[in-house]
Amino acid sequence: MTKDIGAPRGHRLVDRELYLPKSWTEDRERCRAARVPDDRFFATKGELARAIILRALASPLPIGWVTADSAYGQDSHFRRFLEDHQIFYVVTVPKSQQVHGPRIDHLIGQAPPEAWQRLYAGSGAKGERFYDWAAARLPAVWGFDGDEPTRQHWMLARRSIAKPDEIAYYLASAPLEATVADLVRIAGCRWKVEECFQSAKNECGLDQYEVRRYVGWYRHITLAMLAHAFLAVLASQEREKGAQGGIHPTSWTSHRPRFDVCWQLDPATVLRSTTTRWRGPTGVADTKHAPAAATTHGVVKPSCDGPAKPVPPPFQPATLPTPKPLTSTNEEVRLEY
Image 1: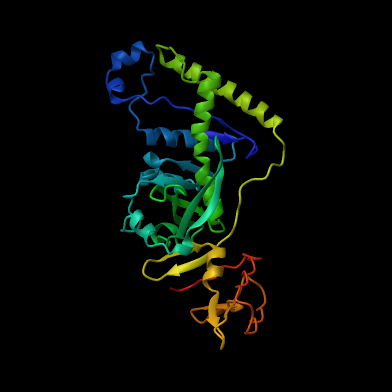
Image 2: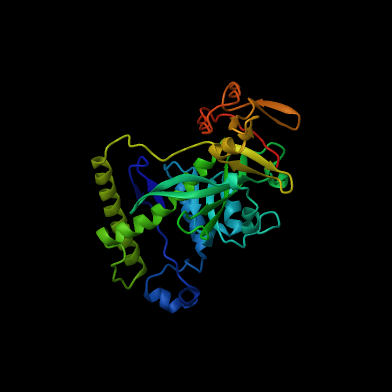
């Protein structure tokens, strides 16, 4: 488990658990020789993770989100445990994960091109991480959420820019006001665990223990974690305060009737797709901008692009003008296709 130090200034390890396989826990003589407590029995990694989270909740640490790899994310009991304790999460799941019946990779495969948007997912050893992301809001499960849910379930996909066939899948439970950029930021935080392990091994000897007893392992790991935390604080003090974080664009929302999810569309792509071309009497190409309001289900909503702009007169030069960049994305426009 990791904890940010005034993110994005740094992060550190804050808790640990020793996983003992059944070959150990079922051999009580071996456990006694290694000074393993008599009340320590076999526990899955998911159960150990829940114990760590419960300790974090009982501590002064401000815990709001949990992120984990697919070993934990595919466990429905683990996700339900987080929701029962009012903890939001973004967890990786395998492509075979079922979402209200269909597999998540099949659902993501139905995403419209406008749903994919390039977002910043945090800095890494090789610089800033950018991926193409698609996200959709999932329908509420009334048996658990009640008539007025306080959280929103999502499915999320991360696609490599260099290798588009490489796609990672996520399930999320987030506050109602959370945006796609918020989910991407939390998903990117999982890499901090690997970064902490790497730096703690390289700088503090986290993996260089030679112990024969249970208590010795915990002493070594705890001291290595303490040294790593000390170095993380020193490093954060050397960095410039107030460094800018990632890019946090907002989204427009699209509703797909065939499956009750709301795809989060890239505003720039939607703006380009709603711009139509026509030709005047002389055959000269011109551009007509999207209307100032979008209509869905008979309801007219203001456009995010401000007041309507006059249509350019005919007989203009053949060069198409570039659409004006989106200036406000506070509104969500629902589109049908």
